[in-house]
Each structure stands twice: as C-alpha cells, then as structure tokens.
Image (cartoon, rainbow, N blue to C red):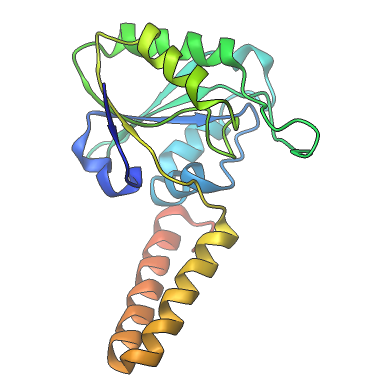
Length: 200
C-alpha cells in the first residue's frame, strides 16, 4: 500500500480499478464523487439504477465499467448525508467500510487499485483517519493499492478556487487569462455533452 499527496483525478488512467466511497441515495453531489459522475456518467447511471436508500447496499460494492473507459468500484460506506455536522461529525459506517475493503481485496487481488482514503472525506463519511488506515492495513494485502490524500472540495469551493486563479491571471497576463477561461468553458461543454446533465 502506497500513500500519495495528490488529487486522485490526476491519476485515473494509471490504475486498473478506482474506488469511490458513496452513500445509499445515488446522489454523488460533491467532491470526488461529483467529479466521477460528471466525467464518467456511466458510473452515475449504474449507481442510479440501484435501489434508492436501500439499506441492503451498505457494505457492498458495485463495479461500473464502460468499453474504453476506466473501471470504478462504488463502495457503499455511509447510509446517507450529514445534515448536522455540528452534532455528528463522523457519519462513516466503519463496519460497511471493512466489508467493502474485504470484498475489494478478494475480488481484485493482484490488480493496481487507486483510491481516496475512503470514508475520511466530508462527503463520504468524515471518519477518523487512524481508524480508516487501520482498516486498510488489516483488510487489504492481496491488491496493490495507492491511496490519494487530498482535500475533497465541494462544487462551490472548486468554482471559487477556479475563479480566484483566473482573477489572479487576469491581473498578470490577460492573454493567458482568456486562454484559461476558454479552456475551462471547452471542458465544461465536453462534460455536458458526455453526461447530459451538468457542466460543473
């Protein structure tokens, strides 16, 4: 098991399998889950086809693949959303995460797997890093796993970060600014053409 400090979206093509932690409601509305759903819409569609809010999904995995595209494995590790983080910060089901990791290790042994540190992000459990890393250590070993440690940003936070970078560029290099905005819009249109739902 290897740990890397970088956004996993920069490394999708380097792995046989990419793990995604998610809930039972097929929302994939923020962070890494949103990036996957917009750029690889077959994952979103396959997730949506599962039972909405079905408790039987907790602790199970779902392989999502499409010809010529990366293979993702959804890991159902939380029951739902965390509407009151001020009351309950940690909403990860550690039992579900353990079952998912054991399933992944058995099914994909010998394969090159990329994964965020499942269950520790704000949108997939907000769990305790030490407990999660212990589960990765004890439940995996047959697969080659690279864990990506990065801050999972909301859609709004990502947009604000992008606009701040563009504003700074506008002050220093107008030509580079116009190119950056044009590229952002081009990629957004490409995403929309693929997913038919959203540009961002």
